[in-house]
Amino acid sequence: MAYSSAKASITRGVGRMADLIVTRGQGSYVETSCGKRLLDFTTGIGVTNCGHSHPRIVEATQKQCSEIVHAQVNIAYHDKMLELTDLLIPSLPKGLDTIFYGTTGAEAVENALKMARAYTGKHATVVFRGGYHGRTFGTMSMTTSSRIYRQKFGPLLSGIHVAPFPYEYHGVTSDDAMDALEHLFKEVLHEEDVAAIVLEPVLGEGGYVPAPPDFLKRVKEFASKKDILFICDEVQTGFGRTGSLFACDSDRYGHDVMPDILTMAKGIASGFPISAVATRREISDAVEPGMLGGTYSGNAVACASAIATQKVIADENLVENSAKKGKKMMENLRQIQSQTNGLIGDVRGIGCMVGVEFTDSAPTGIKPLLSQHCLDNGMLLLGCSTFDVMRFIPPLNVSDEDIDKGCEIFEKSVKMSVP
Image 1 (cartoon, rainbow, N blue to C red):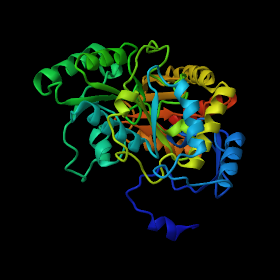
Image 2: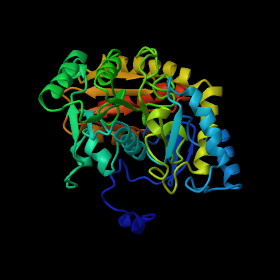
Image 3: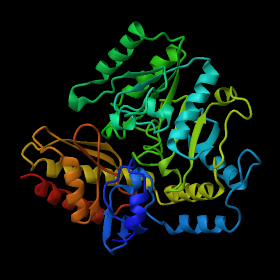
Image 4: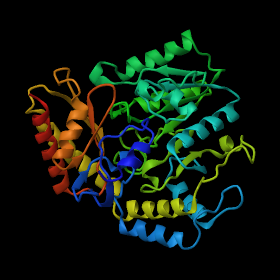
């Protein structure tokens, strides 16, 4: 078996959907070491929004590698970071005018919390049930999408409090969630202790559950009245994934939800490790020079990739395309749902971020079983959530033909998975 010794030497704590060796990727497809071509509806968990190896992005990163690879952020500015900043600032939700660059989504969330604590002088944080924010100690303490992320790693960061997320399929409405948040502050928390409320507009690992249209605004208003910062975690939803450049600044949420801090990663640079935290200058000015940084923060090659990615998203109308292709995918999946005799309970999503949830009648272990059958039939598809949810995350430039093909593979795999 190829690389059998190397595989055995990789730490077993890394979960992995399949025992594949991926060697190439182009557009909506990847190729394995044994020559198999697979339709990729995972996009590296919402990362390659422009598809694999987009030629303009490849060209930009190759060019940057020949100029300078590592221009360390605590030593000097570099031109690609400044160029990226000039591109991003005008596209951010209104009022966000400063950016800090990191390398991962978890690092972005950690630094957002640092800024919130420094600005407010308070320490506690409120998160929502089913949220995923990362694997570092701080973000792991904030994550409740699955116990696996914190298992055996305690004690965790103190001052993290969890409120219900509105999950209408399971009977939790926006009103229910707001009532619970208000009671949390009556029974447990005082606003003088709470620095930030952190929210994913769409639960990611928690099940691809979009917040109801009124919820973000209500949480923002609740936070503002108590002088608490509202942090919108758009690590997975950003850069067109939901049919808007950022989910919080969209028709669904009224374009009037202004987060105090916004975190970004994944789709920002098509697979190169870079993340960002955007906020108002008065908040970021609460941290002194030297309080933030990182060896690889705002890496020059990653910035070059991010610049090219932003230009591709704009030039190829990928935000609008995400909304259009996501609508088609949901229509296809709802047609499949109608033919499953109650096996599929819910098809939901925004843009190209779609979840399919199975009912209790589904066989035990349906998620890994479906992933394997989809793989056998030529497609990569992941599950998520403590419930039985499969998530569809195609590139934003996916073709209608590949949407149809992916849905056909899914339908075939569902039939294979159910006795």
